[in-house]
Image (cartoon, rainbow, N blue to C red; front, side):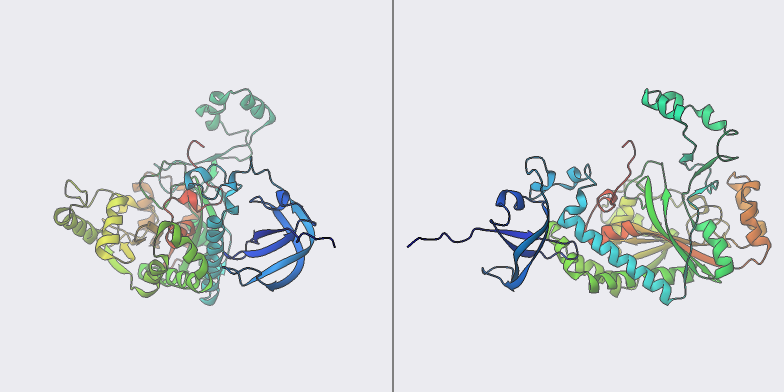
Length: 449
């Protein structure tokens, strides 16, 4: 009587990207050899029978494959993700492969859930989704750097290929734009708020989700620290700064609550490697009343903290100085211990179109700061008074002619309105327990990279 050896099965952990949980799949070696199906990163599509798990463990069910419909093999000696754990600093160099890691996949599902919550919130509150241009000639701050938009010819590309970068970057070349595609110097947008106000003057409450571009070097944990970021810009018709604060707080609470309800397993998964309590952090947003404090009062509190708690400040802060992000983070995280809205900043710190307060020194602006992360949202009431707006344009050294179209919104049917810009990636830092924006952005663009 011939003894038949039992079948040899490859036991696979398969994930289709829809959940943090894997499905156990058994593949008979007669269907395909273990060497082809076992390496991490293998792409496989199988057909089979769901059954009770054949072994005790974390899986209650498994799929017994009886047919392989597709098999994409990998070379385990060459494939980066064959290693179980990889530092985030290394993964930044491989953004095209990073979504395949369980950590990034969880984060992207949270991103999808947060964006779904955002759209649900806006639709439920009567906002309309509109688009704003990415290329424009708007410069709201003379000191801000911009990414210029030029037409690259075949000759330009040839020179670039020959390492003639200095000639390509010659400033005089960019100043002579008469023969270029546009009749004036254009650049990639750094904010969609001004164009959004045009839409709000006709449609009422509006929002948009679009990229902004900032070539300036980041400082600290600034909300803007990548060359390209996607922002949610919101404009609220017939409203003041306090109304925008209310909407901003309600939106963040709604989004965090949605993520907790729809992505709780992903939040738990991301909590493990950092030993953080992300669920509690999100609940802090949903259950806390955001502390609202003026910029002047914040400076006073920070000076008190530096004296009483040695928070790293060596000299008293002055109201006209730009507060370091690390100091703000310390106060919000360790003193207030909840989300904070800082309002009424000095006019020098905000764009010309923010409404001037009665004191003539501050403007009706606000920032939302979350513990451990910092800035996630910045908003303001816009200046609706034509004469004041013209004075502010001249005061900051901008050309009035450049903003004639914007001034028309004040000349014809002006009204009070306010809005804000939300960095969804900054909110993901908070929800996912990450520290760097480059780790939550699918294809981050850095300075000098």
